[in-house]
Length: 443
Length: 112
Image (cartoon, rainbow over all chains, first blue to last red; front, side, top):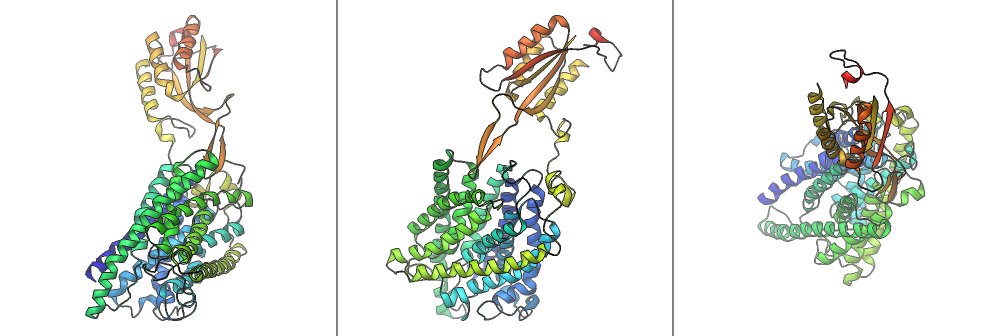
């Protein structure tokens, strides 16, 4: 128990790091230079707002009791009656709620008022995330996805990634395209930020997946504690290994498809492959063996690399590919459990390739569909409610001209002028120095 | 007097400057600019989306010289900046009526 408790403190801090700064950097680098601060701010704001909501009624709605869809938001309101011994588990789950909300922001980059995002966050986390977290993670007697359907989801392929991916899809449709989508170049402005962000997400994800262990026995009895300790040793090794290998395979899967389709293997492809692999192994981390993990990672990397191109065909401005990476990756990981699950794993269920028949495949598919439907309905309700009241979009003038950073925050990310040039085009410092020397000689 | 303006590849700037200094050019104005010529920029691919990048970064050098030095100076720039590949840039010369040195008020040739 001591070791487990210490690990949960570390794991919780690791997942916190995934959102701030991991996801903020990953997304920030992919936006245009005039929108990077707003993009990063959406993650930081999600941290502040969702975190506070979580201790007020989030923990209670997700883990405060039984229910098919959710538990009572009032039972443990404000952590009333929750022992401080259990606070670290509350904090661990808090970080999941935060990053799920923050993930959505990539689909609606560059164009949303900060005030609309601030109103959206508490509504969405309450209506879409807390219920799905209850259905998937609480595993109470009535919980829909975990117990009634019996779908395996180790760390949140459904509740986190499908949930956020569907929300991104629905919001991108409701909010609409950026001005100039498909016409103006909107290429990533700083890929090194994105590479750093992807690396931080990868490291943080060990907290996310390996910290999601749920014990089968009672710690208070001697036999139970011994059994739990044995589970701790074997299962954390499995989830850590699967998380690592699936991610590695996904990098290669993404780069291979990219090389075949577009002729080059790119750094953005590698960073995206990392995230796609991590997303797909999230539900499967405990269920599969090493071969299964590599297969799931490689498939997810390849499928997502293909999927991110579809938004241009459908004219959908999912700006940073939340759908292509999180929805598609989440579905791939969740459904492939039905093929690669092994009864030696945490769930004790054999998938189709391990002699278990189609049962698991059906359960997994149903679990994914429930998550898609739930997130779709509630995101649409909130999305339209905000659209027809306060409105989502910044003024078109602000979006097109100075950009959302200046319009919403009164800041700009980069001060080019101070490097020595004028008119916003700085001379590189080496050139500026040489120029100063030349002028010195001249004077 | 003439104004020699050169738009060159950024990585050629140090060579051009060294060659001009060796010739005796004592000052110039340099700016970072972007533009394109016949090569029409290039394409980049991000997550499968192709972008035409029209503007290519360049360095612009401006030097005011005596009429006698025009051929030498423009020749030095061309020689030092040349790689033989597309996008090497341009050098052009235009007439200058008057030059004043701000510090002393010296005019024309004395101010160069």
